[in-house]
Image 1 (cartoon, rainbow, N blue to C red):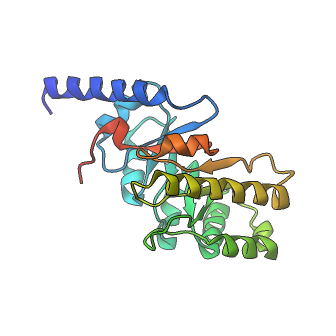
Image 2 (spheres, rainbow, N blue to C red):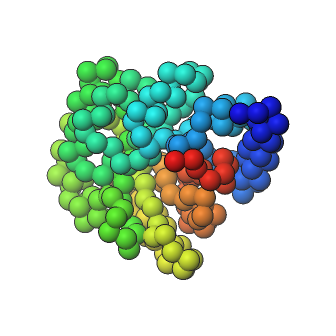
Length: 232
């Protein structure tokens, strides 16, 4: 990377962050989605004051954890395979996409081995696209009703996560976010009323974070608006 190019990237990322931050209230956490972006880009955001970064590939996240500052709080935001959980358990701060009870059990098992309590969000399928992962609302309530999750002492269920349909129909996107917030409120009241850590709703990305915040998101996952288009 040339010196001029590096300076250009520095200015771009800092300007982008300033622009994004203007639209994010203080009570909403920003997860800088750094997947597929180089260490240098992460460091530019880090030096601009950001500490929460999101990755979707286990190998990439582990490499960045090893190379980058240790006060970064790493969030895993991708589809997590059970055989790869053990690699991120020692350091991950939050796993966003827990989309099956089997996965939750395996996270608990690996967290117990590592003598850690790992924070998790339960992913809800709110989109009209079949390619998205997650529990249906009915599946979620069935699992919570069973009470089995209460025996998992090394996971801390902190809230829910969902991804809206990739569409230009803003009313549909807003309705999906609204549905997730209503589900969160019902689950909080019924199962986690006395649990102060069950408080997060992770919804909203670069294309739709503003309506997500308006509908109650506490955590937004933003990549391209900060780092530009990804290099695959």
